[in-house]
Image (cartoon, rainbow, N blue to C red; front, side, top):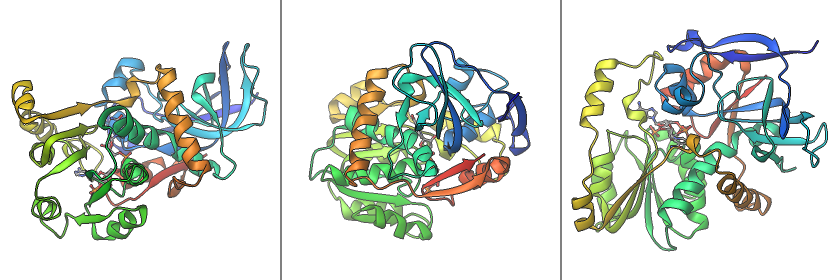
Length: 346
Ligand SMILES: NC(=O)c1ccc[n+]([C@@H]2O[C@H](COP(=O)([O-])OP(=O)(O)OC[C@H]3O[C@@H](n4cnc5c(N)ncnc54)[C@H](OP(=O)(O)O)[C@@H]3O)[C@@H](O)[C@H]2O)c1
């Protein structure tokens, strides 16, 4: 009998919780597809799942859990009713958890043909960050050409996709990065200005570039910048909130409960009365709750794949790790030193 391998987290904690285990190859039910995995995208959210702080992981899976939102590989099996895929077809897929595995079963609607121009590693790195960026921009913020947009963490996974999509839309993009080594990466993606907050005063520099404020700001830092991001919107402006990584540790892999509690209390509460008067909006989402919205996923992926095919969106820049080295990959993405996407190879 064929054996599968997966990373299993039995309880919340640090890197030692990421256990490589053997299991039976999963079977497909009606309408499902089994992907024999060649590459697995890592997302910052996977580290929050490991720490036990990711709400949708608790809502949909609980413990034990195999993290992972995206894989690429070949079709290994199909369930009844799946007639448009053949064994061996190269594909990529999104999955609500369970991606850190050699064999992943997903509904047909979450499987997409791998573009020939992408390697398996690039395809596995594509869907989560590009869907996040697409949803933030084209379902929520709707930036118009010529508008000035500030993107925090502009050289990371989501940030890289945001910068490129904003340039496709004709916006003026100000990227913010936390390390000097990332400045060239953000510029290479097309950012018109890059603020290196390790060296420059973030908000003074941002005000110099946009004295009247920004039309849109995309913020996954959370408490460390949210209030100032809102204050730096022009009228009418939109703040898109999609993460809270500044509450979490950059090393060690375990959150500080004191810091989490203090940061929770310090996180700004935006009043509808004030927002109406200021003509500013705060928009927020977590894509992991939206996987059942098949029309939405399909529309986003179709647009993204068109951009990839026409070379308007560059394939994600990837750094690979063996699946067994997942702990090292988690430590790397938590450190804040990485750029682009990290990918696990089974
Ligand atoms: N809501 C959603 O649906 C959704 C979907 C995908 C991702 N996200 C969120 O988007 C963010 C980016 O995700 P990603 O996977 O693309 O990761 P990433 O941007 O590749 O890596 C995270 C980046 O955040 C910054 N950072 C990390 N830890 C930090 C800390 N403790 N304090 C301040 N800054 C820190 C660092 O960049 P700089 O130092 O250069 O800023 C780091 O490189 C995460 O917060 C993630 O949870 C949300």
